[in-house]
Length: 201
Image 1 (cartoon, rainbow, N blue to C red):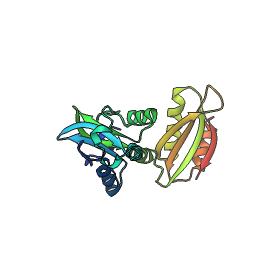
Image 2: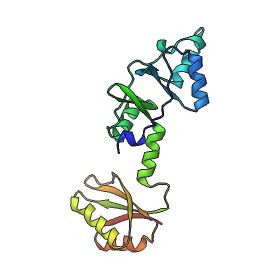
Image 3: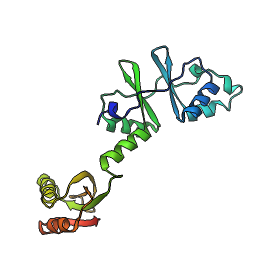
Image 4: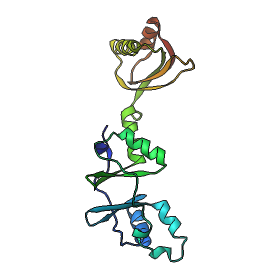
């Protein structure tokens, strides 16, 4: 999934000449935590609410200009990059959001909340669903075989997750299905020689 699909396009911004007090008021009124700083049409920097709160501790902190405290070289991302890359940068740099730039121009912002919403959509967490957890070996055909069995038995796969199984040469798969009777599917998988770890109706 591309960043462009999940980013906020109607971005609230602030000029570098604004004060810390102006920025905090704007954050509060808009119920947001990050502000891209734009000088005319030029992206100039980025400021987070946590940074602004720290500035308030300085003498005259309310009246300090944003240009003097903003991050002029923030971590950014492009609209055509993958959302997974946005998530990696947010995690690596321990930040809450990324300005989205195209040819140096601000075109959006993507935050932790946007990425979480995308993850929930992809995984189908909010849909009524069933789940089958399996342990498979390294054979690539095993995944295809399991998928065929599930579909043949009437299962409709929403998403698939993967984790480490106790054995180093095996993988733990989580098949989330549209709500259905999963017992017959699990039984067919067992008959096919696959190790069913758990079933969630």
